[in-house]
Image (cartoon, rainbow, N blue to C red; front, side, top):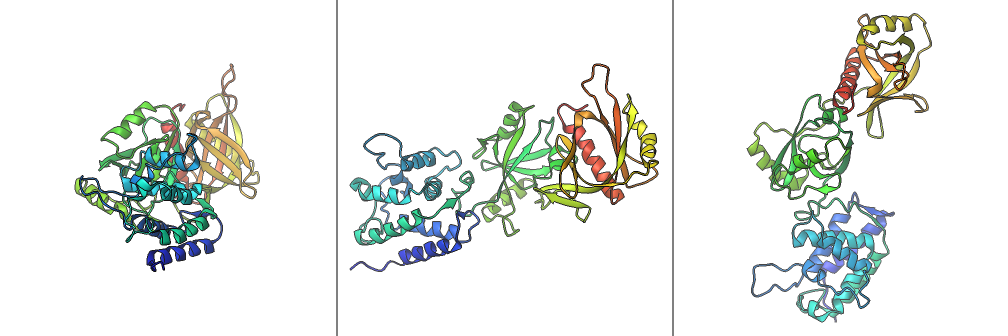
Amino acid sequence: MARKESLLSAFKGGVLRLREDGGPCSDTSPHLASLCQLLECILRKGLRQPAWGFRRRDYWHWLEQLPTGDSGRPTPLSISIQKAGSCEKARTAQGRGRYFLRLALQGKVLAAAVQQLAQTPRLLEFYDPVSSILGNEDLLEPFLSLLLVVTEMDFSLDLQNCSFLDESWLLPVCITYETVPCRALGMVLRYVDGRVFVTEVLPESQVEVDEVVLAGDILDEINGCSLRNAYSGQAGAMLQKLKGQPLSFRLLRWQWHDGGVYEPLLPYLKVLKEKEPRFQLQRSPRCRGEGESQRLQGGRLLYNLRYLGRTSIGEYGGKEVLDRAIPAVLERHSAAREVLFDVKEAEVLIQEKTSSKLLCRYPYPTISCVGRYVDSSNLFAFCVATSPESPDGSTFDCLVFASSSEQECEEIIRRMAAGFKHTEWFV
């Protein structure tokens, strides 16, 4: 009679809880991390350590030696093993083993891996038949049955989020930040044990305007290239090579889902604080305001404004024309239109408030100036070229808007001015 094994009972309970959650299991599932930890404990239980040598044996060491099959063609199992072995972000046997388990859960090949082990005597010898589960025939069978249940479940995991698997099953919050070509992003970086930390977001920089990156975040990738185990200056060298190209960053947040510090970061942050005593974690972007005058749409901050109208100002679009163009619009007493105003990285978008229908877009090269009306603190306007490609030269229109406050008005003007400054092909 097979002995009772508490790990199998716990694993069975974890599988049932995960099934009860319903739908594809994602990284936000409250039961996923505990299930992976139990699975890892089972794979390590009774694992024999070599009598000589300094390398401690882990379950990854038999996984990477599994036969690929008689046909020589890649199988889903062999592809998962190959991906785990070549992962740049997993530097240790523990990290590669954990990355494989996540690949195997999503690819439904975990049961196949254990079955292959059972059919390979030289690898099965990694386990003690008395104290292990995988090396004990009576315990291996119920374990395989549970793995087959897991195989029937669907997983939707962010497999790129693997940079901390060397240290923990707890995964950081991971986001993508995309920005336009610009002359200076405005991030101060510090390298700590192969990780690239943002220690400061410079005021009025492109990064501050974009309102995504926070001091304390980690640069994990730039345009798909991993920065795990980066050498000092590597991120800067990559950005120099990519100068003038659109940039896509993969960021690891210092802040976890519960609002606290992501726990595996604590040792790094301690070192960072020793190197830079003035360093402080940044909880929110400096540019972001609050109140009813603003709206979040798709993670972006939009302003609720009243569009008062536009007027033609001729062939000169300098800031000086605003003093006569704004009164000209106001004197018409046209009905104001409620709009959403979006100051993006390379352009300004204006949407109808009720339907979010796009009314117009103005890339920064077509905007000649922006400024506030001196007689009313909450009115501002900007001038746009109406025929920028005409061989006879551009003519300009002035568009006038009313905001809810002087502070909001100044913020919009400042953000548009930053857009002029940081767009590579600004006017």
